[in-house]
Image (cartoon, rainbow, N blue to C red; front, side, top):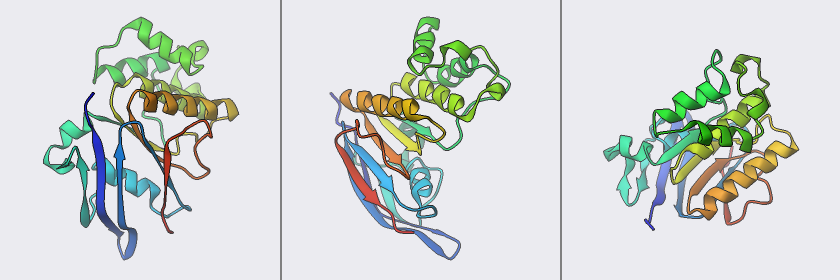
Length: 208
């Protein structure tokens, strides 16, 4: 088994005159989950964007396997899946078509595997409808199917239970728990906390 490790050292980031991230540091190994908590505006989304290279900190660094991720961002991106507030779906395509192209860019995907993922998240019955006709919770479930189809060690999740009902929130907990059991890592920005079924969780509180 490989020894992937994510480390953040003394991360500082400003938005104009506002000091959003103030010396953030942590280390995450396989099988572990980091729950990033804080009030609105505390920098949870900013931290995730900095981790995956979409935001540029003024100080500090993000390390993947001991190397600064900016030395080879494409290689680092190949090892992670990022799920933001909005599901990365095209409104005019169906859930099945979205997953075929979204995941197909990164790996070979057969019809049986795609169908199984849609069924796993409860999306099979409406998998041939245009995404624009789906509710926000249904779109989130499609995005979760895509997440589960990506064989990468690191998940970066921004409010993963947004727009989901109780069953959907438990589904998120199940998917995270299964990912961790396979040796994956999760960094999740949350407002109300992850489902209690998720274990081996460390909490990082950001001040507003």
